[in-house]
Image (cartoon, chains in turn blue, orange):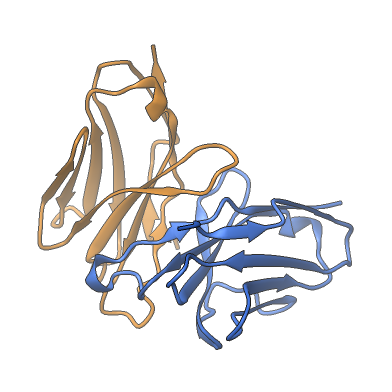
Length: 117
Length: 114
């Protein structure tokens, strides 16, 4: 059973370009969470999605950031017009149910390291 | 507003001794707590969890203690091994919320010296 797959592992963008980060959850998991880790900081919650629905986007910056989890295909985190401050490691995690219910835990991917030049 | 805090950025212990990692939280709605371990260039991996109805959970060399009145939890690793060297994150969630999202601390880097 493959784990959470994220690609690309490394992404370099120039200021003003778009970044698209992909995440395929574990088989059977329909709940996806995105987290961001800035240098020397912990993991910050960004968004929680179920298939075709955004459940909680309270951690997403109001502008330039969007996320989707279509019925078919991976979850996508999209950052438009990237700035240097967007440079970070972006982690996707999945679970079969909402975390906390039945003591579910998150399974993380290896992350995408975004570098903005 | 840091709801989950790990006040020690780093910890160094000798192989075979006990490692104690601490975590404090402020949100009294949190009722489920987890510890994750992270190696460089990898994603966090689940280590151990505890529900608020318990005050201790043990899994092999790892034990998590929860003190609800103090809003404090700790992870004990005994005996510590060099392979335990990693960054450890504590996380908390409120199962009553509609998202159950995990809130993470800043992490503690553990170094176990041979």
